[in-house]
Length: 240
Image 1 (cartoon, rainbow, N blue to C red):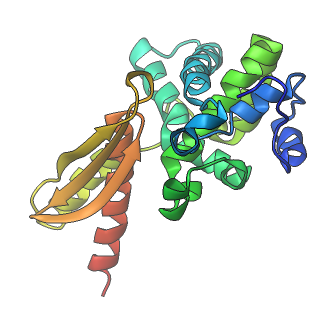
Image 2 (cartoon, rainbow, N blue to C red):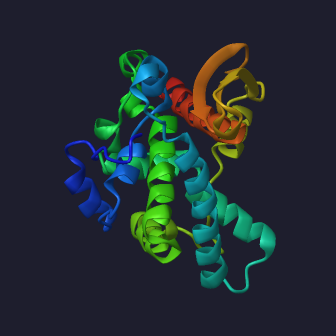
């Protein structure tokens, strides 16, 4: 995106919610450009937010990793890894992004727009990571850290060494056993996107029936989203 371009309308409220005002508005604008827009407007000279997403993902891991390391000084490495993963997973980031109404500000191609791209969890999570990357470039680590801890405060507050957010895949496994059904099988439907920002689409199958589908920038994230859908489907099915 051109350095002289401004961020789209409606970002003032977003900056207030982020608790950060960008000095370089072109970084904020770039964080809101989905790859589908660039693909459908190749002559505009626009860039997508994929590089910022890559950077934001790395910065996010460091910030949350540092936070759980300091908060739980006696927790072993394995437990810290699980806690960090619980906070930075796509489902969590997508919820935060949805609360910020980021989907309404994203620039999409018509195809992505028509297929529900504004509410797709993988798009929302990627946009939030892009904003983190943009904040890091704009004002440095401390500002990005303050923003991330502000946005993820609720998710971080759920973490304890005694109880951590459950894994949907484990929950689904237990639910199928409880209902006397075959164990879930995860099938990779497709993977797409550039190497540094791949997306995965996964289905989960129980007893030959597709009960859920998920998207994510990691296959594990897509599997967890699919598992959550399957849990909801089985819970409805089991009701009298």
